[in-house]
Image (cartoon, rainbow, N blue to C red; front, side):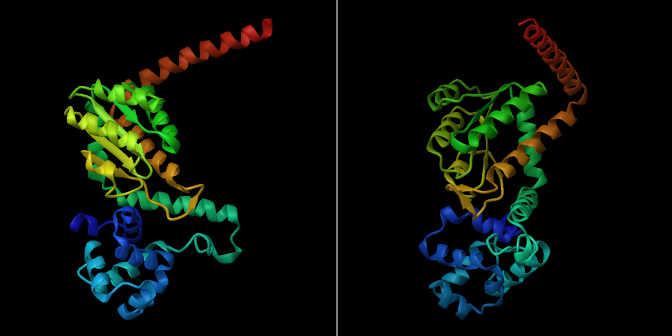
Length: 296
């Protein structure tokens, strides 16, 4: 892993690769993520006893994270904790200790997740994704479940500024759309877990047809990244409600907004024209509807 992965936020990166870890690596990751401050103060022997993994496995895990060994891992962890004040949501450290209200904790957690998302995506990768969308003859978005509203909103925003984007609600229609893409098109898949079979399948079809593929996921090293030319990451969350990571959609939407604003700024004149035309027609429609309501 190398240099690029070593530069990523350590804890966010660890959360992101959880699905790809083997059993022993997962034990170590869980030990660290459960209480990063405890992990920081632990010796390698204490981490061995606490996690149930061997010393050799711990050193190997540190290297997988891009660190030379356990000592460098602790230095990187200490630096990250000092910068972000990372701690568990349930303990109240995401806010101002136990005195913070539940509402404040949730909002602070979202704010932290957004900052982690900014750090985990390089400017180069974000620009590559934006330019691919800009050059695409057509942009087709693929998603199901809780991520579909993000795909629909992305399609709507891109269309608003003149980009030829669309998405299909039905998963069968998404497959059909994937089979009709051309090499000059862009396939954009969004999946929180990165394992949603329908979405991955559509990107596989598109990639096999020579289409540029982009993914947005909360899970690094997941199946969707294997069939994507460009991978964007929303910060993964260890905190789940109803099996959905708490901040997943907020961070996904932030990435979409960043791409939207970049493209809108890149084509300021076109954007102004598109927004004006759409605004005028929408106003006419609203006035017509209001007049009809008064007559009725």
